[in-house]
Amino acid sequence: MELRHIRYFLAVAEELNFTRAAARMGIGQPPLSQQIKDLENEVGVKLFHRIPQGAELTEAGQAFLEKVKGVPDLVQDAVQSAQRAGRGETGTLNLGMTGTAALQPYFTDAIRRFRRSFPDVELTLEEANSVGLINGLMDGRLDVAILRPNATDPEELQKYQLLEEPLVIALPEAWASSDSSMALVTLRDAPLVLTPRKVGITLHDEALRACRDAGFEPVIGQSAPQIASIMSMVAAELGFSLVPASMQQLQVQGVVFRAISGEAPLIGLTLAHRRIGASRITLNFVQLLRQLAPTYASQVEPLEK
Image (tube, rainbow, N blue to C red; front, side):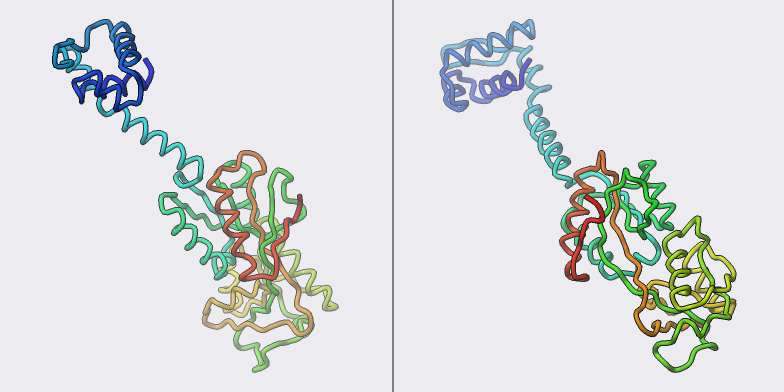
């Protein structure tokens, strides 16, 4: 049984006249009669009585009508739902981001715009360190993630560099002068508070590199798994840390931020998703972020083709 048979049946059932139904459907009356006959043969019962004024439904036809009258609308809804899903307008987007990315106006703006453009997409957010985000992408728990890139990231991921930001010094308020910047080397004897490398490779390595470029090997202090715990340790005067500049938006009692004198080291933020099997929703989100990036950074370049 084909959908056209249902449509022809409904036209005759509503018009109760084969000629008017044929005109309504844009076909000749004989072909319409043949289509109804084919339908009756398939169902196995008569659906219409032919009468001088046109046609009337049999009891079987009335029962058939009750069951199929909503079929065309149901099919149309299904078609529209499929088309919307194909355009990435419905479904779920599982987005992961680092704690520092969540502080970037760029990403909060992007999420706001995405929600306005695709209000029927369910957006779930997960905050984790970059290693956890990579694992989430690889095991399929996440569709897309905003993270700190590293050369060891799996080749199965497609990555786009979105922006870079300088590292700044986070230090106990009691240690700080009134100057807005300071030479990193002045902290050579102070403990450096870092995330363990296994959970934050990029930030860990860049902090060490910045100290070594400044001419000293840092004294490694307490490790902290999250950026919030780093701030707590700094506030407790357990040492200083080097953090992305976006962290300055946080007001942590006992912690002050200072720019690094001279050319500050930069740390990037990257958008990543699986190369194979990325959903239309994921690609819509990627497109939006890449279009919006020039507003916040000079350019957006793929890290790899």
